[in-house]
Length: 69
Image (cartoon, rainbow, N blue to C red):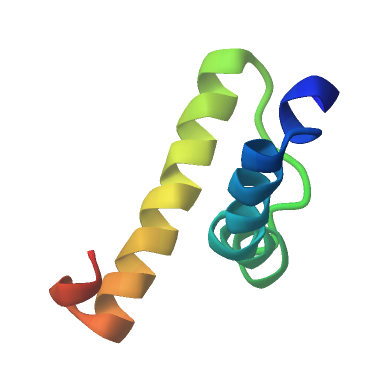
């Protein structure tokens, strides 16, 4: 991973991630309070994660409408 990020193109891509992806994780973690998964097992955790992602996207659609999607 260090080899990928340590290039000029890698730094540019990673800097975009900080502005696009990280706020979503921060919202799910702090606002929706998903600090830990409450279920056990990969299948159940995957389903719980997808439900939180769906809730996040529905909140964006409610706030900004379908134009943001």
